[in-house]
Length: 515
Ligand code: ME8
Image 1 (cartoon, rainbow, N blue to C red):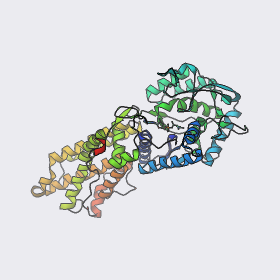
Image 2 (image 1 turned 45 degrees about the horizontal axis):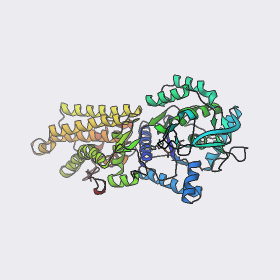
Image 3 (image 1 turned 120 degrees about the horizontal axis):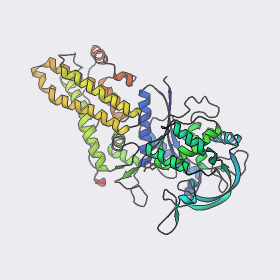
């Protein structure tokens, strides 16, 4: 096993069904997890649901159901979404899991032992939607004069006895940490935002609640439950066995989250960890928001789309490909049925899918098995080189979390193959020069294999189907396999038949109801 690599998504509030933003985050994390597995890392990938807090209590009350039942029901939809989108998580954590209570209480005790907790009265503004406390100076005014959080959500005045965490004590340690770890917060714009916020001064943080009891009980403090973000963030530690496990996957390599919750991950979380004497994660990446036709999703606009419906309409791989290709990772992006169909048809159906389909069906029909070497020409070596450069471009970009650029690099390899086919016209060579035709087909098969392996993290089902058609063994699809140029000769020696392939990436049409 290679070096550990631990990647997490945010854990979602199961106060409603999952939406496209949740799907996007899970898909991006999954592509990175699969990529790191291909690179030989010992990957642990965690996602799940964040079930405590006032927002859950209020939603359950509005629906007239017990909060635990709401959590269980909605959590199952998030898990089903992950399963249907081919998300290769190692654990789907629920913050109501027993081991998570133990981990949350352990980190609490560690912060208490460090002298960082004290009991006091909290009076201030709280946004239930954000589950966040805000300083007066951060608030804005809504159209009706009501006070709003920086995220535009309503805030209410709360006053209760709570435990406080000495966040103020960590202002300088945090600034020092950011300075010496430039990759801790990415992308750069979020890093700047966080640094400005911390430079502005940190107030101590209220970290327990007494006005409701849906949460992890504070140790030895009857009537107090933990502030939902304390237990939510601790899920990342629960997943590696804190406090008693081997924790070999800690520190996390990557917390992948949305831009709206960077403050919790890049300020509160490292401060809690410093206090508890636990190593800090390596990178917090705040991705952008996925918007529908450029607009924020909201129930009142009626544009909250079930990711399951999108996957059913277009296919799981198509949705994954579109989101990762279209959205520049770290920035906001927009989707619509037209944009999905246009992108997927141009790049998956007409380019990559068609390349594999044309090549394999020609071989199946005319030869029945992979042809022996044939007569090579310079163009063959040039194409393989271009394809290897494309795969290397994807590798370099994905290693640096530049997903869209990585796919773009890969696409250049696909285009090179299509140009090569047009120039070499293997179909015409069948009668005139079969030896040359054999070399062209061989080159194409080698190129398709490399491109399919490289793109597996993005479109695992389709890429695997193509590799199955080529007879590439399931355990021979990692990065090391890309550079193995003996594969073709071994495959020919085996003399295995090439059967007529079924198309992997069908052309899409815009569904009538979405047009
Ligand atoms: O914030 N586009 O849960 P959540 C892209 N429980 N990403 C989006 C999005 C959109 N339109 N809308 C939301 C929470 N997200 C907390 C997290 S972590 C210890 C606790 C992202 O269900 C959002 O930024 O509101 C977050 O990363 C994730 O979806 C879950 O959001």
